[in-house]
Length: 143
Image (cartoon, rainbow, N blue to C red; front, side):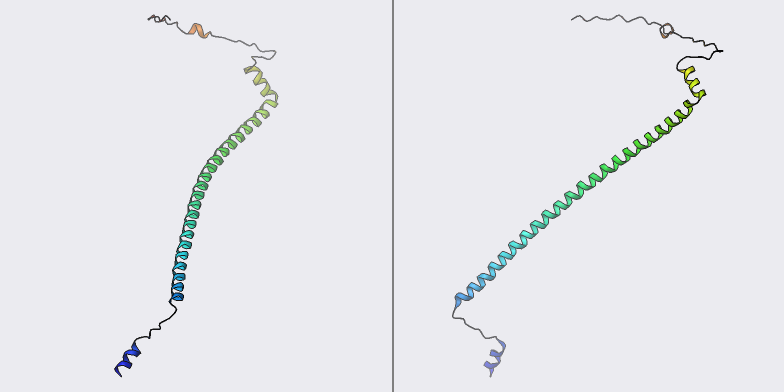
């Protein structure tokens, strides 16, 4: 009876006469584990490469966004300056299209006067106004 109790506790060992088949099965399992490890390592490397590519793309896109925003600001300033110049030119066209505007141009720029006016122009020579300073005499270099 004591033996029966011990036998009941232990699982029975089955001895396989064909040990070759068991070894080939264990070899297949080991080979399967090795190929699985290689497969997971390969996938890890591929995923890391994808992560690096995504990071580089994000950095390049951010730098492009910054440069495009700077260009947009510059173009906006140029457009605003052009619009201001256009408004000024429109005002000048309106001012110079009437007779008084043309008369102002003739008086100021062309030095013209009307029939009953006398035009007096006083020119001052800039050379006479300036005092001549004596030149400093120093050492003279000769080649």
